[in-house]
Length: 192
Image (cartoon, rainbow, N blue to C red):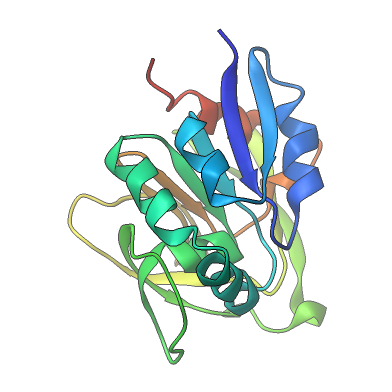
C-alpha cells in the first residue's frame, strides 16, 4: 500500500525532498500547502529553509495543531535544518514560533554563515553501514537533549541528528544529495 508522505511546501527545499521520496517504492510524496492535507498523511517532512518564515507561515495557515495531532497519532515527522529548529522545544537566543515536539535545545546558524557551508561523509550506524554524505548550510546544532532522545550523529562533538519515538531531526540536508538512504530510514518509521 502506498504511503502518503507529505513535504511541508510553504518555503524551503521542497522539490528536493519530493524527488528523493519518488525513488522509494510504495511512497507517494505530497507537497503540503494546507492544514486540511495533514490528517491524511502517513508521515511529514518539514524541510530546510528559513525557520522564522516557515514558523510564521505555519501560524498564518493554521497548521500547528494539525502537525501536533499527527505526532499524537504516532505518525513520523522529520525536520531537516530549519525543520529541526521548528520541531525543537527550546531555541537559544531567539523567540520564534516553534512546535516543541522533541525535547532538544537548538542553536541556530551554529556552523556560521552561508560561506561556512560544508559537506562531509559519516557513518551513522542507525541509518546505514556505509558513509552518507552530510550537507550543512547555515546549520543549527543541538546543544542539549532530553531524556530518551537518541543521538544519531555528531560532528566535531556537536549533535547534528537525533530522534525520539516518531520524531527525527537532522541539522544537515540529506535531500541535497542523490542518496535516498536517510529518506528510507524515515519511511521505515511508518507503522501500518
